[in-house]
Length: 178
Image (cartoon, rainbow, N blue to C red; front, top):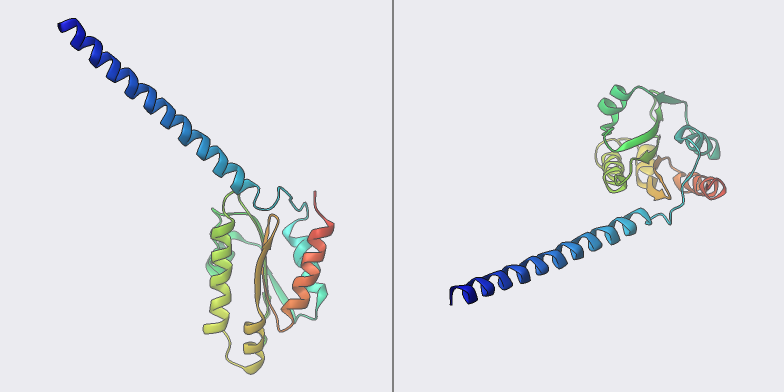
């Protein structure tokens, strides 16, 4: 009698262990599928150019005012609010002291950080529209600002002809795929 009770309990435990093993395997499988899906968001394509090279193309695509380069990490964090925990490579250019509103930010995010980088860039875009445009020409540039991503590159272009600059950027990215 006691032996039957022990066998039943062992059988129940074995069934629970088997069920937990199947469940754990299912979770691992789902995790792997999610990781593959996230890594293939950009089609597995990457751009080999540096952010400086990409920004240079944007800068020459339309007439920008005199621009300042920000290269120091602490300056970029302080003036732009960038979080370097999400950034592999970044180029920031902003109009020199003037009545113009112009800015170029090109970012190559760290793996898995594209959403955070895009949220940062959209925040900059909102700031232009809601806080930084006082003159009519600044309002035009703020409204024309584009934020986007392609492959492993995220970008913000603030300029009254940002669409033309974005087109040049996208053409460059297409030509430079690895």
